[in-house]
Length: 470
Image 1 (cartoon, helix red, strand yellow):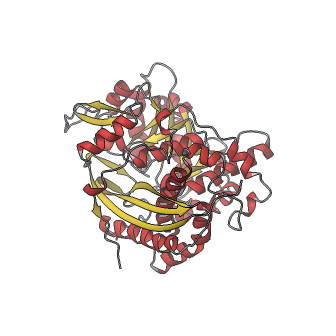
Image 2 (cartoon, rainbow, N blue to C red):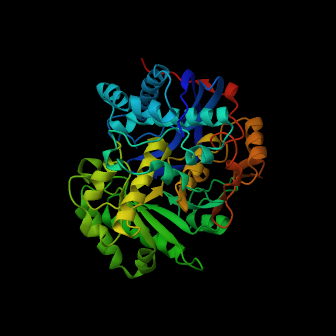
Image 3 (cartoon, one colour):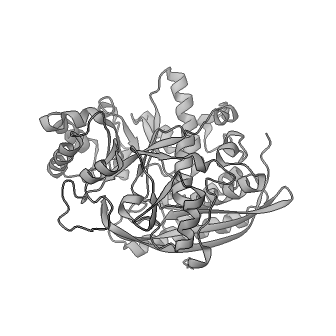
């Protein structure tokens, strides 16, 4: 079909402060609070108008890990990216939803680069706006996100930025995507998370230790953070394995290095020591892949095929631009993460690459994973879950519900609205509305309605306007 043209008429930017119930240590930062960005976009097209919305955490020390920058510096970087994207989208004229993204891609990266912002930061602003635009487009045409993508309502196509997809039938590929009724939640074990007992109990009724998480949610998928110190990582993994090995039946594990190893030799040495440790034999057999263990400055400098031949390795933070995954593939990487903060169109194009490459290889060698940026209940969580499900991913990292208690900071009326609209996804627990995880799974049925995976909205009047840097 011919993708309908839309114009971005208005953009409204907001924030809400999110306080964490327990500290989350990943990479070089321990997070205890963070703003969440929320955006409303009014689009016009086909003789009508519609509002769309999206939300995302302004997570520090993931996009830019320069230790000389404060968390506030990182927040300003991401706001600046949003500001550049808003200017470009408002001036983008009438175009398909995808062409709004593709047509401003190089200029967005250039404008951010002139401000000293790396491409990963540059892509954050468009990633947020693209979801809001698509939400509006879905509402304008009264279709769900799933139907819109399968019909290619956004107009996704091979472009000069993705020459490797030339000749590939993207329309047929998208039409073949199908969401599942549920997805398994992969629990994150941060670097300071208590494993068996919490020396400083919170007492809010939610699980605090890994052992309590397993008992409460029945989860079978886990993401384990490693910190770049072989001895410390090995000791902590042994402690974790002692809990996971008590699970009756199979469990599955991914290792996330968050760029904490200087080169492939360091992570390969950890893997060999893990395999040689008797207490880690079952855990090693459960490892699905290792995620971005190498600092991005070196991640694409050397071939990782030797390690990849033993355990698949994927890129996450290094996936800063549209051309990274094909380059990483030549170096022995077998996968790439889908993360809403990097952009839904990048995820869909990378998923198409996996489909094409696997068809050419005659086997399912290349894959995507679904990773988290502490997404919060409501718009952010629901749009991220919908994307992961449509990509055909059976499990997704989920940690926002663990480090943050429910709809933290949201008024009761907003919580009630999301619970009423999505009773399969949330539940009332201890007087609060919280994510529902049963038998390790999250139900997704209520996401299949008009718009981008949400039949409720934030209480916009409760939010503060975003203060964009000059």
